[in-house]
Length: 360
Image (cartoon, rainbow, N blue to C red):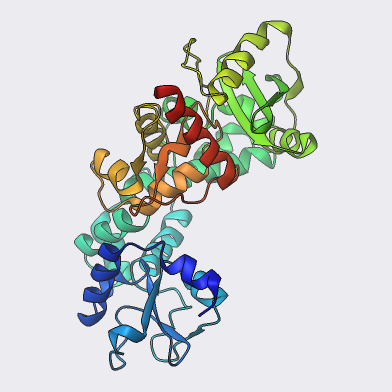
């Protein structure tokens, strides 16, 4: 086994490995997708539910994803085909396909389950496990996505409303602030008429880009390349008026840089973010984590009342556009190691170290 592989295997706690092994012995299909087991003697990796004869425990190591197993030289099993999508993930993908084509105001869970050849209870569990959302919540997010796409290609608001099944414009406008970040009319114009100011400053973690509308901060990016960070703003608002911020914007920037340096917050900064309902709930929960402290992804999921939504929580952290202000750097793996961070693990480690040092 290579040094790299040894280092990775150690990142899975003994407690987690014990749980994985019990699921393997039970051929528990509910564990499919949460990890794969790899057999050192054959260099093959499998699903927990694989029907093949169980290998000796000493020959087994675990990986959280098939990609990690393949990077270490393991090949997918030909019996259980762990490199193909199945189980809850496949069920949710099929359901999402049905929902994406639907133009109904609401969904009938029973009818959707019958169309997929499953039960409402199984479908509901799969949604919570894979996405952290209820089927109706995902359906609403998909409708908003379709509505946005139609506006972007030039369809009128009334046509887009009709084709996505909204009974009235008021139903959509109720959701516009949370889902679109602006009114549908503004979104249709690609942000035309919307003014976004940005500035780039130096920080202990490299460059930091802060962008905001008149309603609040919309982006806090950490990086090294200014052009890359600016391009991200233009991609989301291709026809918005994006320009360097005025002097009045600088106090927000100073506040953010000071927080990056590990100082206590001094100003209450407003946020103007586009988010699904679930993302918003996760980000609000992250803001409740005290400085210098951490929570695991599973702890955050439980605090939301969705203990099986660990992966959905991780995705919400990964898509957080306002680093530092929404402190996704305070979320770690169950075994205490640092998980992926949009702005780089070294920055995550430094942010935590500075916050802990400031608290001593």
